Image 1 (cartoon, rainbow over the protein chains, first blue to last red):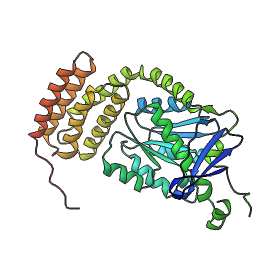
Image 2 (tube, rainbow over the protein chains, first blue to last red; image 1 turned 45 degrees about the vertical axis):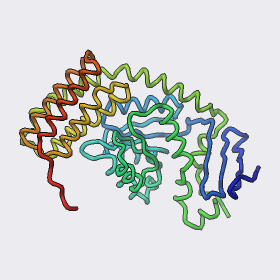
Image 3 (cartoon, each protein chain N blue to C red; image 1 turned 90 degrees about the horizontal axis):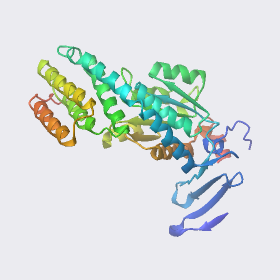
Image 4 (cartoon, chains in turn blue, red; image 1 turned 135 degrees about the horizontal axis):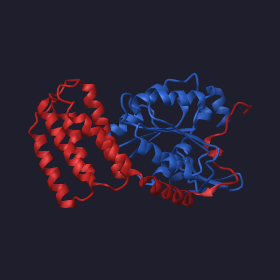
Length: 183
Length: 154
């Protein structure tokens, strides 16, 4: 289904699997804006990395209540990578201010793991700092999104949907030629 | 063109027939968060104990000990904000500034201890907003008296 939008944009509404999920693409603007109104998170595995037992539990419980099928938790970098090697998560939420290995170091190490495919897992940095340079640094290192504490359930959902919509892992794992074929 | 290797995107994964309106899921999340927030008191007691134990060991301690202490403070501020205990925010921010931007010596360790005392006081939950503001102001003055770290040309 297609319709003409303003500014030369081509607005198309994609009814994905009998309208369970509605996507609105503004391809003419060179980016895709997607509005997801419904979701079934039960097929997802999400890893929460936080050395704070309170924040770890809070995030894990919120995600579980969203219906996420498997919520894994880790209190530090080493435990996180062990969990990832045993079962690759679909999305990672990681606290920045951890000790001794912080979230930025986790992100950098993860993004280098191209052979295993873990490098392409969507990564959401969770932090108490909202300075512009912190946001820029995290995004520059490959974070897909950035949540500043305190945040609401709605904010958590927004960021989860955002990284799900942006997910290109299924393309990145393929060769450039195959990527064109899928696109 | 074969898509044989293609794994489903995350968007496809969550688009199953059992999909639920996001607003309903957010409501469930809020209910879960409220249940977890009831356990904040236990976390706060434990975190305050950790800070209290560590505060007097900072004088002369290596940077790693200060960094570990800093991580505890940042976490306390973020966690307290999640349960709307804003009073901790000002004291924790003052403490973070002290640890990050000022020299780390016996004087600053003493000011750290004052901050921890303030956090202990706030953890009782009996201090009003005015008292918190006064406390934060006094702590900020104490921090201002500690020399700042020299800027490194990097």
